[in-house]
Image (cartoon, rainbow over all chains, first blue to last red; front, side):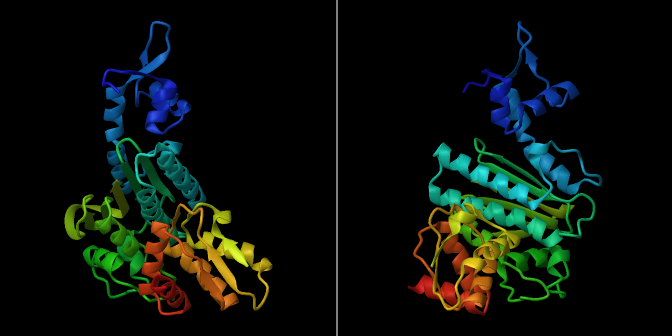
Length: 242
Length: 99
């Protein structure tokens, strides 16, 4: 595709992973203005769509970090776990049919995405501070997945099984490296250990923040590291590259 | 009997879904019958779903065998379960990985 290539509204909807109706709404509200042909049909320049898509990361960060929850298009928001599972399955099928990534990596990527998204629901059920659910966007062309929630964060939820945890850094260290045997007071799946193992050994990169602590695992094979940042996120924010 | 997990979907992710899957299969389980779990046709599985399903299955019938699979996420999940928990699910996972 060339940068100045024109896409119809249907093609643009497919490119961004949203519906045609959403694009019409965005056009009306000015969020993403369409061009108009001589026959008054909407069209989009590929370069504009690419720029808009680069903002997915920013939208996810805003969803996780802002005081008040920003409004999200339906396509980016999973209020309940069953919607997340349905969209996750569709993401997997799309990747398989695209055929650009080996099936083994698709399987592992879906497990990693599923684990991180499901954690948000499993650990916040009945305790969402304001808006329930998660931000979940994937982009097959950019090889990117973004997940975010406005939940309680890893430190607070992990303290239920390990009360001695003092800060976000230690919470992420425990979540990603330590096997918790606790069957009570709640069952823990040790899923973030799975995420680390898969990401370290396969071409799947991870940026995962909760509180002020960030875990990073490079896309090319490499070990995970944790560091503190200045900006706080109460819930969690994850970017997965594949 | 053989339980084909693909009947519950191709992405087996959450603990509640694992519990639901067991509830669905439970009326079909005869007491004392050995059960084989078939992962064929699955795209991805996570420790939460597999732990929940196998824990309930093992509580119901002690005689469970995991059928061979080369699904990468299932193998990674079983490695985590083998290391994480002391108990029947960990034993079953270890037995599978060492066979």
